[in-house]
Every structure is written in structure tokens, then in C-alpha cells.
Amino acid sequence: MTHHRVSPANRGNARKMRKAMTDAELKLWNEVRADRLMGMAFRRQMPIAGYIVDFACPSKKLIVELDGSQHASPEISASDAARTAQLEALGWTILRFWNDDVIRDIDNVCQHIVIVAGLADAPPLEELVP
Image (cartoon, rainbow, N blue to C red; front, side, top):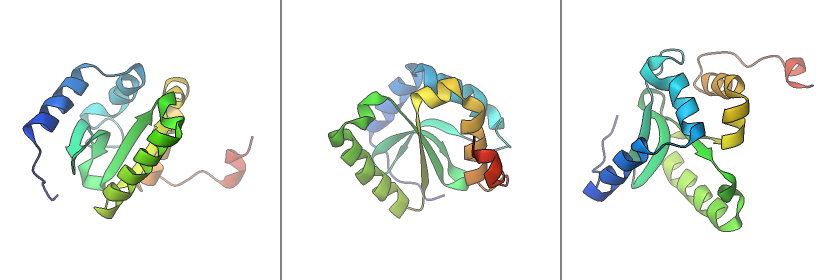
């Protein structure tokens, strides 16, 4: 993995964010920490390219972002798109989930992460349609 310099301010902000996780972040962290999700090693509040991402699995170049309702606003949505483009240009795959989805349906969130990471097959289409 290529390492990039992390500013002391960004490192400090990441450390503070780890201590003040949202309910959704804590719920997902309890599912993915200590290689619990198919052996993938995730880091939380990881600085990457000047950003602090919610969760990252460096071995799979996979980032998981959890978004609250404020991310639906046009300004933040545009900022998220620019951030995603920059991280994708560095070879990362970015997954975004709403906080509510994590709180209400953690199993499907984890299943989607595993599928995107290439560690499981997607369910047949007929299972996806209610």
C-alpha cells in the first residue's frame, strides 16, 4: 500500500473522530473490527489523501462511508462526489450507506461489503426483488 504523508492536524482530527463515533459507525465497527467480516482488516477514521474516511480496508482498497441526512443536501452531495472521484483516482472503491440502513439492516450492509470486496457471490436476481 502506498503511504501518503498525513498532516498532524488531520491525524489529530481522525483520533478525535475515533473517540466520538456515531451510533451507525459504532454498529458497523462492531461488525468489521478485528477481521470479523470475512477476515478483512478494517481501519476506522483513516486519513487518506487529505480526507478522513469512515472505514477503510487497505488490502482490498475499499472505503465504506456512512452518511447522515445532511449528505442529501446539494452542497454536501457535490463535495462527496468530488471526494469520491479523487479517492477512486487513487484506486479505491467507495461504498456509501445511509446511517439508517446500517442501524436497521446491518446484515445486508455487511453482505454488500463482502460482495463488493469479491469474497462472496451476489445473490440471484430473484432474491433481490421483493
